[in-house]
Image: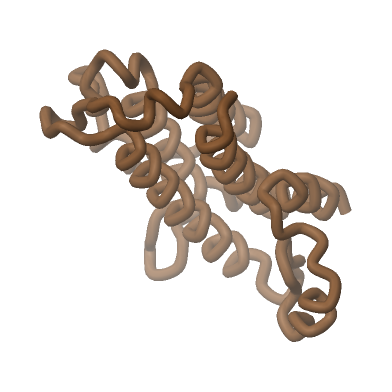
Length: 187
């Protein structure tokens, strides 16, 4: 893997770890419950992310990023799922993204791909997808924090403790941050 692609892949892995750490904090019955204000459930957000990843990253250099067989509307349908079903869907989407990234080189970044028949440079499509993933991981964190209330345990810098962290930033790199999130999730 070349340096630029590696940096993008590492950021995807950082957000994957953040999502997994977040989901691990929520009790099973809450995975399918609507979020605040009757918003999307954690399951809906995960289904949408997996659907988006599958569409965008399957044959990403040769086929349109919006696949004809994608049922985007169904991704947002209310659903009741087990943790196992949710994590299976989650891992499917992420495995497609990470496999596609592993196959790219920095030379691929300036190729052109299509999304909804619109030409987009690969580097633009990757940044767009990374921003989309981080947006939805933020939603997962928000909904999970809402469900957990005062029992919430931070996966990043705990509220009220930035000065201590700023003196010894131990997980500013995506790979060390992803490892930190995995360790905190086990607690």
